[in-house]
Image 1 (cartoon, rainbow, N blue to C red):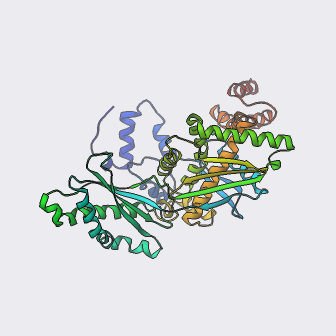
Image 2: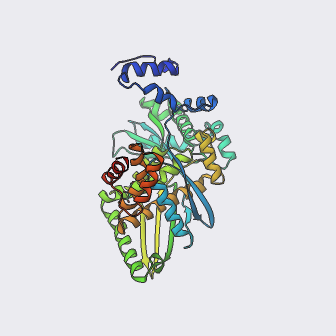
Image 3: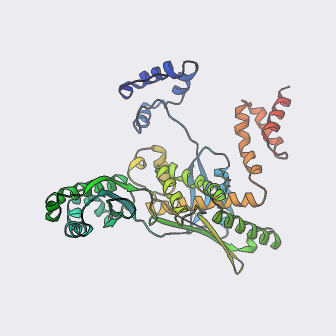
Length: 436
Ligand code: MEV
């Protein structure tokens, strides 16, 4: 173990040498593996190196395609970046299932994004309110150079509201600011506006008489966007007559009943809701990653939304009324299709291209659909065959790779497990048999 200063100043080979010497000395193939993942196209490698800091190699995730998604009447093949087996297969299966049943219908409910100037003020609340009212327009004029381009695209600052939070925390106030960022995720735009608001607040306060007489001024603590965006909301749904849910009327009714009960359980039981929503995020994150968006921001915002009523709950809901099965998801998704990685990463550009260069609203819809499809597939398996059957089938290749099965062994194993249940030990036994 070793401490170092100036690590970021070392060249890439120097960083790798240092890592190898201090942390990987008992890992003889370390350098080979690190370099194995470098791209032979130096320009492309440099691009990836510069996405972040202290880069030594690339970390691959598979990029797959889930085809046959009918969304508001148009057909999509959805790119998904994810390492977990079964996820893309499950999405594709759900897409196919709903294809001839009207497909997915979507609606963007809102696109408002949020940020705050968090500040302290120890003086009279009414003085602060009067100050805010008389200076509100300055917050807008002093951000004019930042908002100019965004306004040209139809976005900008929507509102700034002073909020008294002193009941919850001594002296704590906020400027609660809302934004429209159109096709951009807008983090840089929002944070730049907020930092300017913070400066304007402190600057204008210095010359405000009511503050000066008491020598009490607002003190900015921080200016930052919120990843909780309950008004940047999208809904996706599917529906069909109950009879279409099974081969026979009895099977269809039984499925609708069990499926609905599974959703109710996720609505009232947080233990189940977390796993239920995790399955939804398998689909959401995969699209978010493939399209170059910030999956940590999406995750944080979605889970906060799932707990908005005080208890963590399901993001999906179902009704069965007059023999119609209706299943939907509603969740906040602050996504962008311009700026950031979307114009830099070649595979992100390709993914957005495959989706027909969607607007941010369209991408919200597609992503919500991927989450709903994922949940339908998971709950479908859970209330019928269980998930292990399909999951282990998909996992077979991983197990075969782990034991370095050759082409012939793979083919024989795939053949064998068409009629046998895949378990880890069964695969090992079969390989041992084939190898003896
Ligand atoms: C596994 O990644 C996701 C599931 O557990 C989701 C669920 O239980 O609904 C299958």
